[in-house]
Image (cartoon, rainbow, N blue to C red; front, side, top):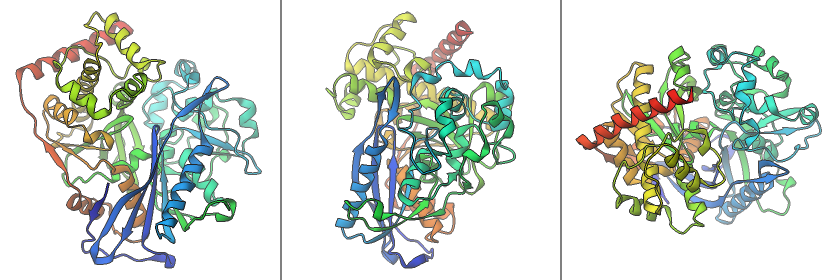
Length: 508
């Protein structure tokens, strides 16, 4: 997929004599890609995919782990493809998912493949951890949504012998950056997701670290997005013909990059970064760590240029991805959308953030069991399953839009949906209808674009985040979905809220 992006009236300064080529390495939980942008002066620049590969975790000795060597190999293949296409020199940035980490000993050896946040080792950890620090106090300190896979909880249950051998802990994108450059840093937007940083002091929180018996020395220095990490150590990978690459530490959390790549030009806007997860939130100038925000389980993650990504993690396309996998890819995603469109809407209500959906053995069976337990009709066909997922994503979004407006004390005028899920026109329209708000969809490659924008800002391609976003807006084809008011939609939303409230009371 190619995007033409206009330069506008901004100045580009090429530092270090490198060609004006940029590569975004964007890795999600299910796939990764290398996206190239070439700056053409007055002609703007064009974005195109160089290489795409699958990603996923595998169970090793009872623990779900990421295949680190696979990721390294695919990145090198992608960079080699870039060289074959004539890219001799480039800047490179890496973004991945959050919270997961690798451990490195004092000799630079990586101590095994990183564990996946979907592993079951943290299933009951929050109940145990609260005896160390009360959960409301923890939230006042870090402002981070309580999720069992937060890094603080992973470290709480981490193998103590393994930790004793570690000299440094590096989050996934920083770990990959270290492998390719030999330089270790901790990028702030991603580090904020660990629940180890203090929202107010903007540094490591000693009391939280002491509670899990971790020394601050375990972490590499904190850096801002746009930090020049260093040159690729090409001699470490002699079997690959690689370009001369300078790595830039971008906003390494993929959600942070996606929000940078959101082409917003309104005062009161919200976003959904729609991929494996749906991240719904707003970009704020300050964090919100109130009792109400804690009870609604919102998170305060750090963005670029001092912003806060105030958002809620919602089970997203993971549900439909697992249905596709469970059906041995009998239907494509577009086929499932077409089948869902033929089904009656709002036949089941599902709390899609129920922990049972985090990593079930069989998503189809789990959804069906949930509907049976809650005395609802059980979706059986592919179309019924897809419809149930899309309906309930839209309904859940609507509930959280209302919560977001209450917490931020701001009426949201428009909702931007970016990422792969922005291609789903059925879900986009459902979201506009149920949330009763205009939805602007695109770009689907917002994460890679945000990655590239930080690289360009760091090398003076853009002066500000606002100017970068405006050029994205002027250059990317966006689609707007206006809300269609109907009594049946209103009734479904009221019934869904009652369903969630009843379920929550029964769980207490």
